[in-house]
Length: 280
Image (cartoon, rainbow, N blue to C red):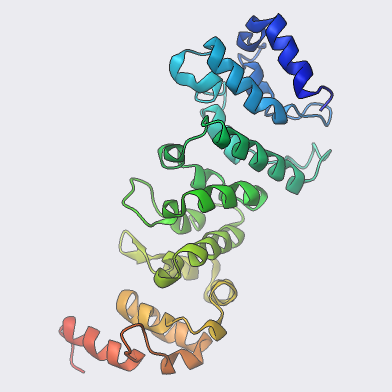
């Protein structure tokens, strides 16, 4: 950043109309700040621009100083684009980690200023937007603030773990691991939504189909270590009985575990077969 925040604020005081001036692509200064130019970025000034933009009515009363205005040619508003943008290899003038961390820090400042609200995470699907290997700091920021966005509430959106392994997605394995790791951190009792279903198919089965059983189980064992004594077989028997044998191969000791009710996996299997009307 070439300028200090004090200098930028002074410029805004002298030329308040500058915050409303669009460039040749129709972008406001707060939107241009999201982009790298010759290796430099004005992204750290976004909270100041948003705060002053609110005061000056940039974009209208409901736009939060331009944060909720659509970025031209992108189809996303400023906050959404801020949450999902990644560093292109050809720009290569800053590391992806640094690019991501700076944006996570700015999101924190926007939250402190009440210019980013918890409800925005659900409204704009920000956890889904940030579910990318180059957006880990932003993903962690959103999930720590609103863990329920991982699947812990009724939502019009598919659970992030299903979003991660859609067939046309690049980096499916890394996205799947990010979603499962976060799910286990906040919802271990639900095994990170590994067995939640979309269209009758569990995330676990979808992962098996999309990335293969061995690769999927390697990720699952990383996020749900066998040594942690999570009753994964119990969950499989209840929610995805067709996967029981595959999972048992990778969790051989899970057959001896008991769930929170004190039941072994064989007891759970017996009860579930009764419920399903099968012979035991």
